[in-house]
Image (cartoon, rainbow, N blue to C red; front, top):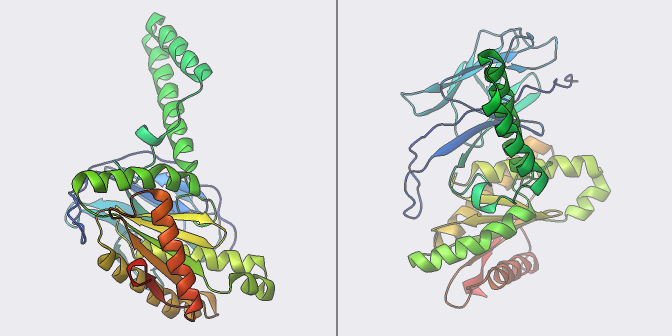
Length: 346
């Protein structure tokens, strides 16, 4: 049994990356890159090399005797315009998505596994995928006043060394607050955005689609017979399946799409600038991937039912769009499950 990893140090950084988007006409946007270890998000800086291993000097320390002291690293590649994972001739090797590797260009959703410990690579759009700025709740008045007082004190300090230390501490506090704010929009089990994030963003995406005369589509996903699955195999196995299905979904959508846990085993994906026809193709790709990968990943067959709906002059509110996608899921289940139904076919 793999030993539990020590909590890694949270690192900070961001950088612009140009990325082609397959569907719609979304333009190149700034991207934030992350490594996810358990419930920790490590924000990547493309100027840094991130060492991984059990040595205490590693940026990401994993506590297991089966892991090499300097096991691997993750670094930015200007050639491939993405981060790359390198295995540093480790004793027990590394895999990405189940395949043994020595060097691998990382794509959003890729999972690095080092002796049973999983590290997921993620990319989120700064303007819309990273939940901050416009959608972030206002800071409490006490926090704002404290910040103002802190700035006043800093202006009155004459000692250069002390002033530099205060600035460093202040930067850490500000970044920690941003990380906490971001985590408030994530579901801890699945790593998807949560219901709060969905509610904040779906109305905005519908209004954007109306303004740009484009379409935003919604995919609702329900794991088939999930209650029976929990009763048969236990809630721990159920959590494993829910987490794994969520990972498959993340790996099958664009960085500009939003995968959210709506509640229980109900998952939903918002696809900006995507027609219902294209959304149906994405939904089918997700359905097929879960059906094919689940026996390998979970040692049991898992299927999902999906409903697809697209915004229109009629489906022009979050409530109406959700209701249409929800009805499509119901029809998929009534039709025998493990299938995709679209709202325009109902």
